[in-house]
Length: 140
Image (tube, rainbow, N blue to C red; front, side, top):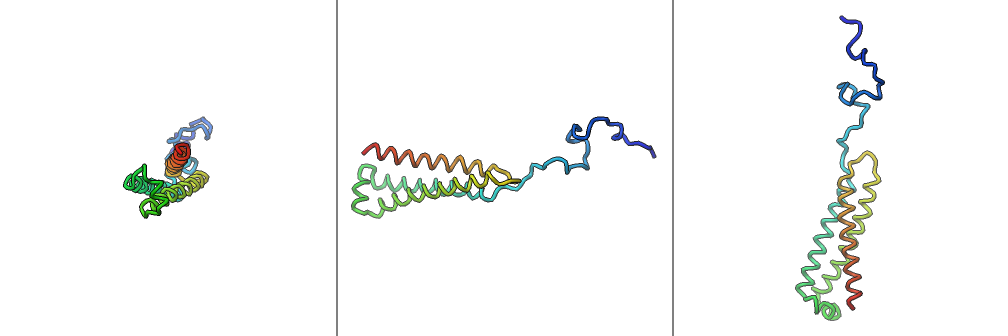
């Protein structure tokens, strides 16, 4: 039995050794298989829900007719009122998704993929909704 192992002759400092030098010493390196952020996943689900709600509102708006939508809202036709409520609801769902995405980004020791996706998708949906509101206000 030899007095020294091959590893004992390695004169590099411990912190500069390669990642795969010691198979048994995995606790020095952070593992990349972190669990996904639950609020990030919820943010992505809310982005999908906001998109579907906005799409349903657009379909209802096209069904009523884009030119007659104001008259239909004043006449309190159910399709027009539902379209407006769905647009407002999609905006609120997207805003809640934005808050959850930011909370997912602030979590430590979690995979932030879904939080980043939720932030991008909810931000895009929210900004598109604001742009539609501004375009409607300018058109009048």
